Image (tube, rainbow, N blue to C red; front, side, top):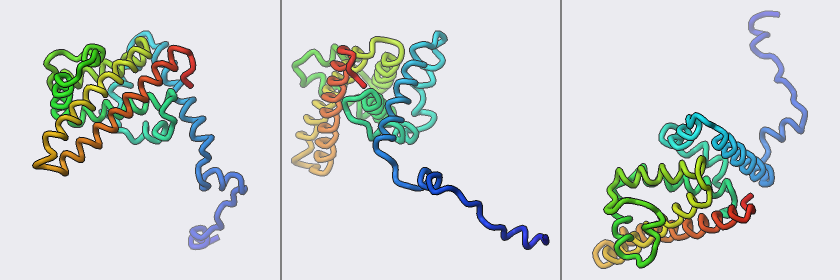
Length: 212
């Protein structure tokens, strides 16, 4: 056989089921199964790690790798589920890390405006600057892996409510002069309020041993 003949060999044939596995559309049931199994495996590994190294890597994961890998695993999971809770916490962490100045502005405005215990539950110092909020969200995420899971979710929910309140009040301030910015803040407030509801629901389910 000449070199030219070697270059143009026939393609390897694969059975139809193998082809379908690689190229067919994703099975939603399989996507959910993988999301739940990876979330449980990750949580179990972190909680059985006595050195703290696994938790350190998990808390720093998005700083080193971004959100893409986590999104692929968990972003399509139901809100009231373990992978859904983990996805929301990582997304919240990324939001704070990417723009801690805005997060601090919203938090302080919300803390002043809210007549509730949410600022106390969230646990940020007063006043909370950008560095303090980055430390706070990392501490909350760490609590998922090595502390009381439900308490960490409740703290995250309270944090979201404070931020949502701040975004709502700032949107009202900007509405007369900068309506586009006001609209962006309103959207952010709605998203944060939804996350607060989702995370609080997950905390309640965890306490009943019903978060799956």
